[in-house]
Length: 572
Figure (cartoon, one colour):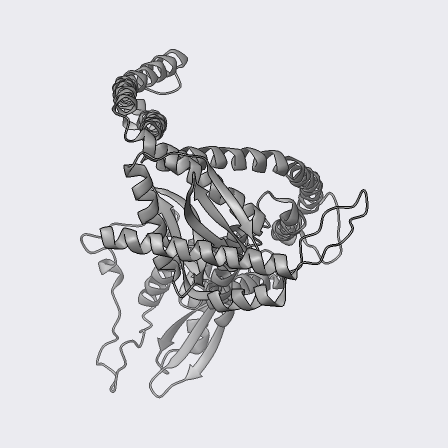
């Protein structure tokens, strides 16, 4: 320890000699000049001798080092002085300061400038040699500002080091810290007690008001999550208050003791700076926020006008070229989305915080997500536009898409919903609808009529006119079939063992197809059995000895029972 102190004293002596050499060289090289009245004094010019000594003793170091005394940063060294690195300079200054504190030496911290630097002294003892190469040029530091900061910080650190050696001051600080800790503990206990009381109060008030108003049953209210949400809200408020108490108590206690005072000051400064920045951000963002609200208000009015116009088009009260009543609502949604998107684009520069790096980063991140993940989404949306504006299917139509049959209940942006004949809710992506063949049975169902086929195979020994009449008679007896256009019978094909007859009928309601065809097929079987015409399914290689028909006496074999008086099957 003594060797280190001796080395420090030697270094300070060399520094003092070096300072004297600088001053002498500057004085020898200075030429007397006459200063005009009213002009500012200029810095004396540095002589070539001074420049040579500076370049020989001072050079820029690779790694900087910060001098920290009694938990306070004083100055950062970035130069090598007389061959000593910034780390060695920090170690030497710390030894000198420790000696001064141990010896109880106190004095004013001062600085003695010289050409290219300054010597920081405490009383009569030199402590720090500050050079111009210690400055951070990129941060815009000036020598005068760094010198003043170094003197101020060193004076404060020495005062706190002296205060830490005073038992009376430490005892008073400990007493204040204990009082603050007790008050904080009491405040936390009170907040915990208040949390239970406030939560119970919220529940009681909610139950009494709901019961009095008759909005819902008390059991239903307790089963819902409204009361739970109130409890969580009260807990969140109390926890926030707990954090404020803990933060304030920790800041106060840390600032009571000299060594931890910088930590308390940093915590207090952080909180105050944060509050100040938030307040300034709110105040500075008011004009932009007002502009954003004004833009959104104008767009909202325009959207309402657009909605009124499109509603009139949908009801037939207004006409527009290229816009049909069934495409008015999808077009309105599209125009509304475009208007709000335009409003967001216009209002974006005025949004508070839109110019910050965090806001820009989030915007870029969302843009990347939409770019990489929207290929399938865009495909579905464009397919939805094709379905809507091509008017391929309309809501309420009975359609067949691939293997799915049913009534269209919704044509959305991303998918089409179909209600099947079994009351199943089937969702088909719009891209699948576009890629498959779609058959619409309702488009001409109310005007020209849509023919639905059903086929039967009959042998060549049955007169085709008889078969045709039987099929038409079965259609005539079946309810749910339209009289116009009339049913038609076609000989679809002449097979090896039978003739294939196809009966084309028009349904009054496509949604009742299964029940109508059930009745039609029942009437066909009854008539063919009644008139002794054999249906050739399954196929036969040889004609049977007797016709394969069901005798009329066996039509209602148990457990069957006669049909209603109308002579047709029941249709729901």
